[in-house]
Length: 361
Image 1 (cartoon, helix red, strand yellow):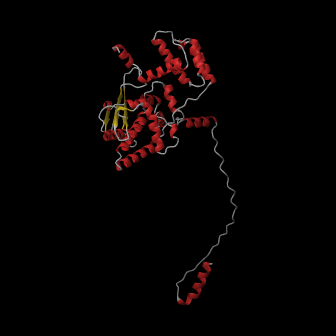
Image 2 (cartoon, one colour; image 1 turned 180 degrees about the horizontal axis):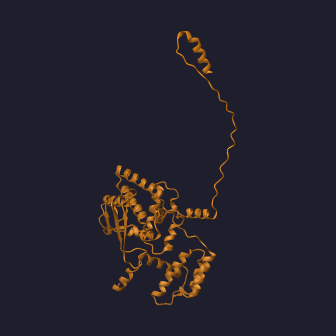
């Protein structure tokens, strides 16, 4: 491979190259299309798969075809008006709600964390190093993934030499490349140390137990406790995460994915009063529309605004104070009693007793 091709290859993510190659293979081999393609053949391809593939998948296949034609200098048939109309018709005839991962709410994160802490302690007590290491890794992965709103590929691309930890203060992670970093400029992500569910302490604990000083932060661990040289791949994070949730007794574990960490943090931040621009800058979103997809149903001020509008349009009238029945008048009679006291002696005992009886009655 020439140096030019080497740099051209490095400019594109490996996952993108693989997914585009898969799209071309599906069009050319599985469907039987000819390349270079015509506008009519691309339209027929879309129509034949309109019911079996999602709209997003069809768009991705078009992107793969577009790249193939552009790279080889052919006219791109995917940009034709007819193709846009076919997509519009597919969207109208086959509407589908986008599937989204269930957000990991803070109480579920707390339950999962508590289970992991207990599992690590139990494994260490019985001398099971492999299980203790695996749970320590998973605890660091979950907490850092949640509080930084990382995607699975970002978690898997973290390298120890690009991580700076200040114990009790925070952690800084540098990623040379990520999905959102189209220009490959690299980005630094910071996260503070927390009093509870702390990602900084979890990462420190994982590094101390594993003894790792360089290379991928999160790695596969075999049944004997041996750490792999290579890091986890993003496709492995979902089964690991669901297995953890199921083991911790979390209901509907299959409804969660690695994206649940990112959605969970975004919803927590929204409910905690974060400004949308502040959240976008922290997580790394450049598109407001994309960010708002993570905040569905999070507007804690929505009910208050509705109620305020109701009060202005339909001011609530205070209910009348119930009137108590009138108290019947009672005729009062004044009685005057005159008592004359004199010194007591034995001769007047009978009179004293008589007076006492009269007053007691």
